Structure formats: C-alpha cells, structure tokens
Length: 388
Image (cartoon, rainbow, N blue to C red):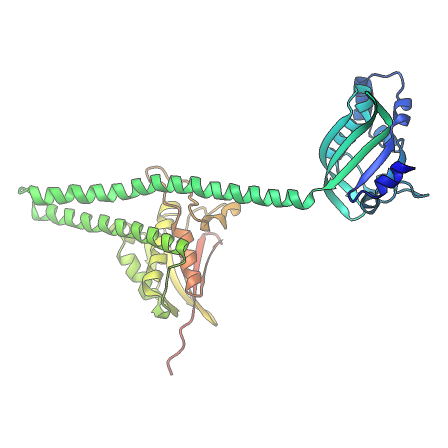
C-alpha cells in the first residue's frame, strides 16, 4: 500500500490506526456516555486501547514503542501503564477514544508515556484523515514527538528565571532595608552632632553619653557599608583577601569589643585560641556578623570559643536560642535571605551570613551551621604553619 510506504519513510514517530472497532464497540452511545464509561472504568479503557487496528507505523514509532504490526505486538499494559502512574496519558487516551463520538478530528496533547527506553514526555498530534468533507475513522494518524529534553530545558530555564526574579525582588527589598538601616544610625549621628554643637547647657556626663552614642552609631553605619561593599565586590569578582597568621580568639575579642555595651554583656568569650591563616579584618567581620545574627535571632546567651583541629582551627559562635528550622539551615547562607526579625527590630539586610561564608571560603575555610541543644555556627580556617 502506498500509504504504508509513505509512513515508513517518515523520520518521526507516526502511527496510522483504524478506529472503526472503537465506534463499533460503543455503537449507539453518545459522546458523554462513552466518556463516562471510560472515565470510571480503567479496565475498560485499557481494553479499548487494544481495539484500534494498526495500518502503518514509521520506523521511529517502532523504535519508540515497538512495532504494532509485529506478530506479537508490545503490550503497554505490561509496562505499569496505570492511571496513577500516567494520569496525563489516560486523559489523552480518553480524549482520543471519544473523539469520533463528539465529531472531534484533531487533538494535540502532551503527556508522559512508557516507551522501549523508559518514560518520556511526548507531544501527541492526533488527527483523522478526510474523504472530501467527511472524516475517515479508519485512517487516524498519531504523531508522537519526544519533547523530554525540551521540557527539561524549559523547566531549568523557568527555575533559573524564578531564581533571578527572586534575587530581583530580594534586591528591591534590600534597597528598602538599606534605606532604613542607614537612615537610623545616620539620623542619630546628625541629631546628636547638632545637640553637641548647639547646646551649651549639657552636663559633661550628657555630652560624653552623646559622644559614645555617635561613636556606636558610626560603627553600625560602617558595618553596614562594609557588608554592602563586600557584596558588590564579590558580585564583580574583585574581592581580595589576605592570608596571614591570625589568632582567632584575639580577632574575636576585637570584634566583641567593638560592640555596644549591652551586646558585649551577652557574649562570653572563652580563653582557648587557634592560630590560623586568614585576613584579620575579614575574620573580625565574620565574627561581628555571627554575633549580630545571634543577638537578632538567637538566644540571650552567646558563647564564642576557639578550637584546634589536625589541619584547621575553628571558632564556634553559639547561642541558646531555639535554632534555625531544619528546612532553612542551608538557605540562611543565601544572599538576601532574611529571617523574621523579632518584635522591635528592623529586618536585617540578609547579607551577613552569605558574606561570612563567602569570606571564609575565600580564605580557604568554611562556615557551617548545626544545632546540638544550641545553635552553633562553626567558622573554620587552615592552621598557620608552625614557625621553626
């Protein structure tokens, strides 16, 4: 037959079937009745799948599904072809099998299908041939195009776009947070500066208190700017760090000393130490971020201790808070990822932990989080060589 020769020359999966046995099986029924029967009886739907007679199949169809014209054609039911496993495919079959009863002559659907090579996603084009104006149900053409790679690439692209959008949204929130975080200390600095320059009735004690507040707020403002600069340089690939011998405890002590008096009182710094290779200013920045994070989100008691390992030293920043939920323990290191700020505190910039891990890794170390009856952030650096 000429049509068989034509189909066999087609380079895509094409199958020509005779649907008249389906029409004969449900003769006298309307489309709604047939659809209800097949929708509610999975066994009947599978029996209907075996009714169409194979007329022709392309080599690509045979490669994908097995030859329907073989003496022993493949049985798709043996491939765990169930509604639960392939719901979209069942919906496709339901639409195709009921098409003659509704007068539908063309259907395009996508579904997961069991093939000779495992499950693939196919875009199925189903169309009845015509004899003049009348559809020929004895010549229904089905073309299944494998779009698995396309859909996987599409999902990856959609995930990438969603992540990009998340970053854009987060940066929009960051701008709002930066405006608030900078405005708060800046307003205090400007206000106290005016009072110090204009007021002549201030007592020495009041004047000293205002000066200390200006210094504290200036430090907070400097920390915010430091984090923003590191984030900007990191995005541009221009951040440089040094690797010189540093005493982790000494650097932690300097970072804690730079905190305000109330924050310092919450921190207990143990005497143990570790001598590692790192950038002193970046080590202090990491400690400051970890302590600030503990103050904002952790418990009231914060402990810092240094430890020596075989080839690395570590600094543990611990607090007795309830800890980070398990599903968020890696997300907290993402850029612009912010926890819910306690009542009375503005949201953080969402950069501190991300920057801290980035800096630790740039110095050849790492920053991790775990919970063992308390929150533990472990900051590791390679040990400094022993002078000899």
